[in-house]
Image (tube, rainbow, N blue to C red; front, side, top):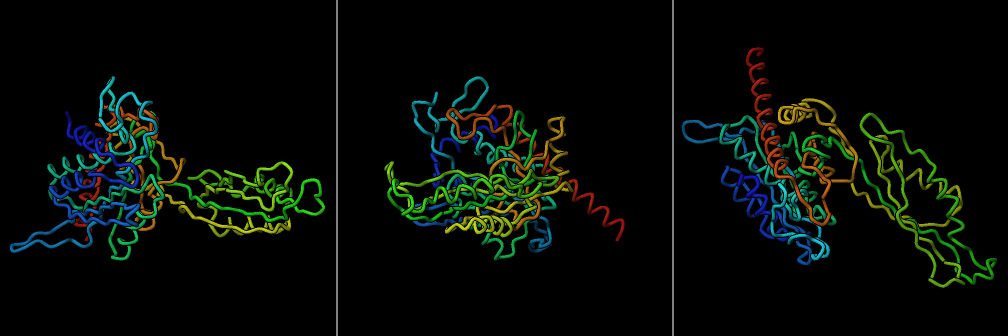
Length: 404
C-alpha cells in the first residue's frame, strides 16, 4: 500500500461530518511536525458548532556556526483544504460503510475519497517526498486546514486568513485541493472563481379577501413585472476569464395557504454569480433601480458569500501547467466555472491561488470514490509542482548572481 493511499484511508475512517474534524488534523499535524512544520491550532465558533482549524508553517532557515535564522523574504507556498465532509445520507444506499475505506474494481470508496481527503493525503506525502530529496528548499511550505468548508464557512478558512493578515504572514502561491478535474486528475484546474451575492427581497402589499381585490394590494402582481425585467437584464458580458454575470431566483414564498386570501407580502430569494466586470455595489444599485422604477414597496437583505478572484496566466500558472504536462503528457484547461470554494478567502491575502484536485464525478454522492491510479497521479503532480518551484527559484537565483 502506498503512503498516499494509507493516509487517505486513515482520513476517510475519521467521521468528520461538518463541523467535526474527528482526528484528521491531529493525524496530518503529526506528519507535518515530523517534517519540521510548526503547527498552530486555531479553533473557532460556539461550543455547539466548534470548528477546528490548523495552520502549519515550515520556514526557510539559514544556518550559521551557532544557530539558524528564519529567512524572512523567502517566498511561501500554501496548501489549503478541508477535513470535513458532507453527510452520507441513508446508509442503506451505500454499497459499503462510507467511513470504512473499501476497494472495488481498482477504486477506493468512502466519504471524502474525492472531496477532499485524498487531496490532503497527496499534499502531505508530496511534501514528505520532496523534503527527503530537497531538505533545504528555497521556499517555505505551509498548510491551512479547516473543518468548516462544507458548512456555513464562517469559522473556518476566513478566520485563519484574518488572523494571518493581521500578523502580516507572507503567502505567495496557494494550491487548494478541491476536486477540479473532469476525467483525469489535472485535466482541469481552477485559476479563479466567480463571486456570489445572495438577496432576500420582500415585496409588501395589503392582505385581503380574494373576492374584494379593490380592498387589498397583491404583492405578487406588483413584483412580477420587475422580476421579468431583472430576468432579462444583461448584467455584463464577462471577460476572457469569466462568463457573464447571472441572476437567478431560487425561491418565491407568498400566501397563507388559503385559496381565498390575497397575501400581504411576497418573499423572493435570489442569487448573483458575478465576475470581475461587476461589483457588489454595482449589482445592488442596478437591482434597486429596477424595483424603484416599478414603484414597489419593498425591503432587501443582502449576503455576500464571496468576491470573485482570478490568477491570470503567469509564472505560477505556468509552473502548475508544466507539472501537469510532465506527469500527464497533456495541458490542463484553465477554468473559473462551478461554485465557490475557500479560495475566495485565501485570495484576499494571497495573490496567486489555483485549485487542483481529483475528478469530481462522485463528490457528495452515494458511493463516493476515487480511482487508485488517480490518487497516485495527484500526489505525483503536487510533487512535480514543488520540484518546479525549486527549479524556478534556483534559476532566478543564478540570474541574479550573474547580473548583480
